[in-house]
Length: 141
Image 1 (tube, one colour):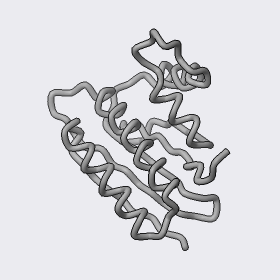
Image 2 (cartoon, helix red, strand yellow):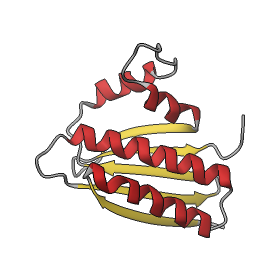
Image 3 (cartoon, one colour):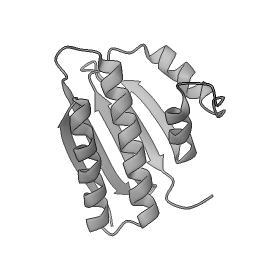
Image 4 (cartoon, one colour):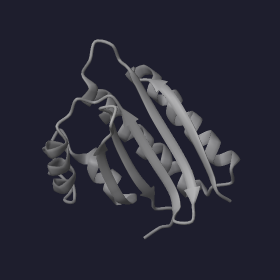
């Protein structure tokens, strides 16, 4: 059961919950497990909010989400016009392998992303956008 579905949303924080719901609804209709749907929703929410925060523009731009089922599993991509330094982003991802202290205001989102995904890749696209691609872990453990 291979498929690939794209979703677009304004990079406005108020639009992102609807984006998450649309992705989850699509996965439910395609027969994905409840765990896969829940994790996809969490990952879409976290990555799209990070993307909006990284964009820091007066014009909110657009967030693109792709969910795809292929031979390797359930894939997720989130792409936006982010002017974030990829080296700093990679350092943040690397540091996210450890749960932040309870006193920390930040860092839990990327930690959760790493707990529920594998094969995380971050790249700058030829159009200048930043794309995060990962495989959703669809089984416990």
